[in-house]
Amino acid sequence: MSFRLAALGLLLLAGGCAHRICCDTYTYGPPAFQPMSVSPMGTAANPVNKPISQSFTMTASEANYTGNFTAARVQGSCWIVQNPTAAAPATFTLTATGQSCASGQGFEIDSFQITDSFGQSVTTYIRST
Image (cartoon, rainbow, N blue to C red; front, side, top):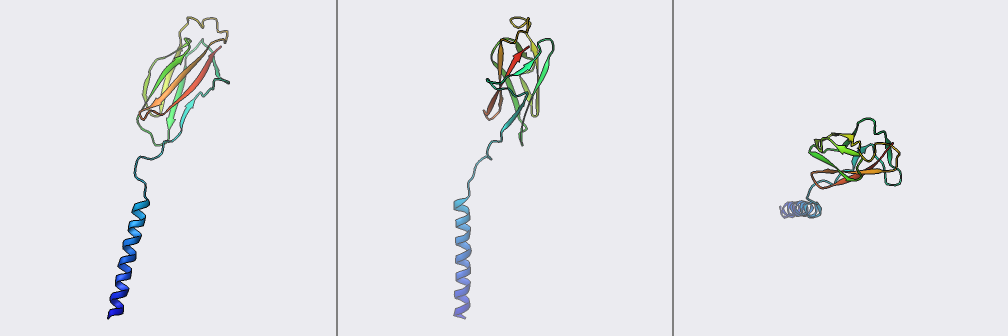
């Protein structure tokens, strides 16, 4: 009888310890951010060329993200974001201003920052041609 009680006590003790170890090492909190995907994606050193004679769309998405994205021009004057806020997956329309880029010489590069509701952002670069 005492052997059964001792074995039962060891099982309960082991179960309690295993649970405590599990719970003590578990990390609570929001899932890690997923990388944002933006298209077209140009860099400062290698901007995407777009003709100023027509509008184009810029898209943004992020795995498991269903909130809104915002797009804003950070530098330049060639392109205007027509719809600065869009739900994921987001599509933004960019139109040429027709002012400083009217000749389409490709000298000016505009940059656009796309941000999710958590503050994560990515910047893409567009050269007017």
